Image (cartoon, rainbow over all chains, first blue to last red; front, top):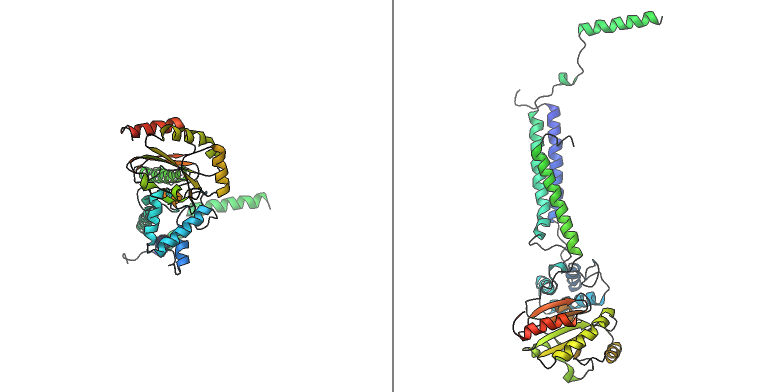
Length: 173
Length: 184
């Protein structure tokens, strides 16, 4: 039966594999989840504005800010959409004037790429570490039921215990 | 960290990962508090056609009509305290260079007409002032507040952006360089 792995080792391996799989699925879901598709014109305007920073506010999007300039940005987005510009063209026009810092999330270029690559790098590292751990667990060899039982007393130990008990009985009758 | 003891490769990996995360966070946090140079510097200035503050048709300014001259585009507002600080410097620049092929254009940003007129009357400014009613020019120039000033060369290219009050001497150096066809 050399091909079969003992029960304890297999259970550990399955647990490690499940943990790695759960981490991989979670990361993949976070990485792949995208915004729900916009429906109305108003929703598209809101979606574009939500991705743009209000230039005169501290960390507020053009969709959330009550500042007049943010309101004007929303109007301009609506106007440009009505003229037939695509959301990407509209975003690019704001980047042309303000730079990429106008975006609420880092651009997928330059240093910003690292932010997007990080979850996938973490996934690769997690899978690698999980694989190494799994291999080690499986290599550790069979753990039999006899091994997991407490060691038996030798004859000498047994005699020593009996002597000690006899002494106690004499001292405390 | 007994797990890492005696495992130099793992220890190095952990250190590299921690340093990378800290560096990313530090970069992100520092970027959030600094204003990057305008991406428009070195590029064609966005054109605008804005009505004059006095409402007269002849007071309207189209930026592209000023091609061939050095143009100082100053975004301001009557409610802006720092605009009052730079006002004498702008007037000084206009008076010194107005006959040398330089135009100062004031662009009134998110203001009321009455307040803006009162402000200019008090300052005694004589250069052309237009009104950016719907902030179109402000957005096109990537404005983040007032005052902000853009120096546009004779070819219509933005050569400098000044955030905050301008200084007449610094402005004069830049303008002189452009007029002499040297420093840009």
